[in-house]
Each structure stands twice: as structure tokens, then as C-alpha cells.
Amino acid sequence: MWPRRNRSRANDDRTARLDMVRNQLERRGIMDERVLQAMREVPRHVFAPAKRRHEAYGDHPVPIGEVQTISQPYMVAVMIEYLRLRGGERVLEIGTGSGYQAAVLSRLAAEVFTVERFSSLATGARLVLQQLGYENVQVVQADGRQGFAQRSPYNGIVVAAAAPFIPVPLRLQVADGGRLVIPVGGPEGQRLVIVTRQGDTFIEEKTVACRFVPLLGTDVE
Image 1: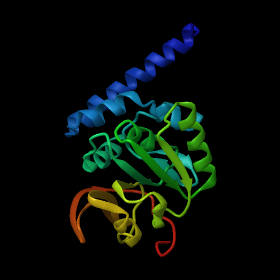
Image 2: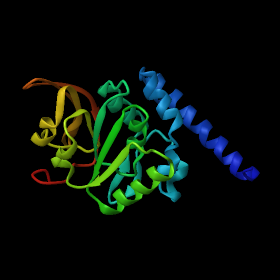
Image 3: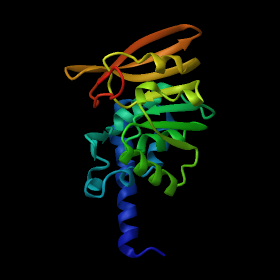
């Protein structure tokens, strides 16, 4: 059995997670019950640095090193909800960070491939995801702007960093009928853009305002 202190901490974390979903997601209009349930289950605090764990369920991004963050819970939920996942999809995430969003995606899709530029973050995320048993996630250290063509096409692609334009390789790795969700813009302002592929046609829809760290890589630095 866990020591009493550990049981108490686990209960506190669970309570904070449920409060996060209720107050930050449901009250702001997140309606996909599968997304809500995944975010009730995935222990966000485990993906935060030890000195930041007390901030994990706050309504804000959490710094994780390398000038990167775990995205605000609401923004994670919005982006994933826009993908409209049903359970059998192959998904690509650009910007692994600590691995939190990949863990949420793993509860909603059949396969998740996640690309991280920084070796320290990729190594850390891979370790945590393995320890928690998220076996359908593969972490790849690479230039996220190039996607991960080896396992394309993807039914959904989600980009956790902002670009001034939508990288062509990411468009081309979306499956017919699939969706790409990406923040587009610069430091002065960004919006989430949903790109839906219909054959050789790409339909773009601008949605909510957002603020992300920049997408680093070829042609976007």
C-alpha cells in the first residue's frame, strides 16, 4: 500500500485534474467527451518539471526547459477536438515537449508519432511515456517542420508551435479527409488554422486566437 502522504497527494492531483476539466474545458465549450475523459485520466503533473508540478493544472502554459512549454490545458483540448478523432487514426504531433499532448492523443487514436527538435526533451518525453505505459506513441527527434514522412499519411496532424506559414511537407502528409491543426502567425498575433484535405484541395479555416512558441526548423527560423 502507498504511504498515507502519497495517497493524499494522488487524491489531490486527481481532484486538481477533475477541476481543470470542469472549470477550464467544459465551461469554455469543449464538448467532445472522449477528449474530456482523456484529459481527466492523463496525469499532467507527471509531465511537468518537479519544481513546476504545483503549476501543472493551472490555466496557463508550464515551462519545461529549452524555452518550451506544456501548452495551456484549454489549448490542448481545443486543438485535439478540432482533429475529430474517433479511435482508429494515425496521428502526427509536431513539438513533443514533455510528452503530455502525445499522451492525451494516445488515448484517442490508434497510433501517435510525435516529433521533437530538442534531444533533451525527446529523451525525457520518451522515458515518461514508456514509464506510464503509453505504448502506441513513438517519439522521433527531428526537424518538426519536415514532419515525419516515413509513416505518412496521417489522419490528423497537430502542431504545438507557431509558424508564419503552413509548411508544405505537413500539408502533403495529411491523408485525404484528414485534418491539420496549426497556429499561424508571428509574435504580434496568431490564430489556430484547421486545414482539411479533400483530394488535392486544402480547405483552410481560421479559428481562435492563440499564443505559441515559434516553430523552429528549416525555412521558419
